[in-house]
Image 1 (cartoon, rainbow, N blue to C red):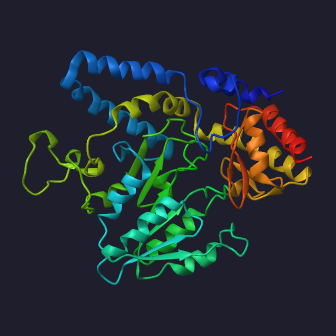
Image 2: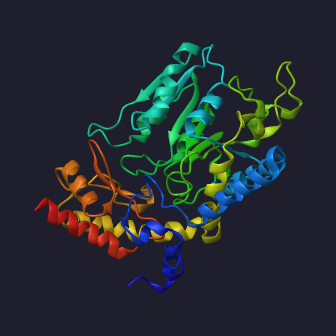
Image 3: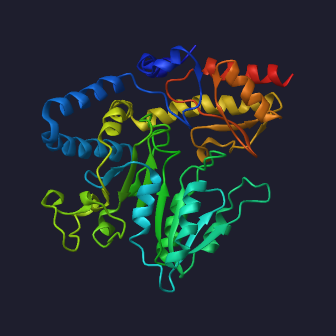
Length: 385
């Protein structure tokens, strides 16, 4: 039975309809939809249908309010976070504000990073960037912090780093990386996709220069909802080349001269924003703000630690850190023949996912139960035979 301290969290299960239909343990990949999403999308449609073009007066203010909800979750001051369609567009606009033509042109990141970010930085070679990819440990999944720190030097322009590595759920020591990067004059952009909504942190306290992320995972906001934070001390210095009309100080003046950048983070708004996606995400954001990420984390560890230990007891390999202090919200388990086991689990209504080379990722959120995690392990054991 769940402990009394988590009863209020489990009382929220009805807010996520899929939980009544499936054993859903894949929030690290796609969070469950909040039932309030339907109402909010209807509200968006009603405003559009009723006000037409005048709706922009409401929509712009609402986008800023929702961006600040994300800011609350990641520890960003109000007015320093902007919503973007996805991480790729946000990261590309940020990269376009960096001059790679001089000696300081290195981009240092790990071979364990999200591939999409790797593609972007490698393509910036045409603008003078020099991508330096720090290899993983010999096992292909371990992150060597000291090796990574040694790669950051006076020629480094920017250090993109994931807070939680997507394959293994390794929680990276961001503070050490920020200290090293700042000591040599480099910027740090933190990818919070696998940590926001399940790991408590503050971009302000970590002193990162920028942060990106999205809502597909633990934020449960669905696709189309990325975000970008830039530190207030830095944002006015950045002049992105990749801009859109909403990045202008007065977008509705439709000025055809040299762009006059909007103040602060608004210069990174890009083109016409994805208003319906923001409306769809807002109920899930608000739920996390109401709960508090500290409590989400407490619940997460109470599920993932027995999950990890239960996997080891059954003789399964575990590709995630055993110590929860260095682990994000999911556990990567390899029961052997992981692809086949994954496919059979899906057929049996256990929703998880598989990543080549590491195994099956299991990501319970605050709305899951210990019984669901145990049932998954039992089913894995039956399938493995």
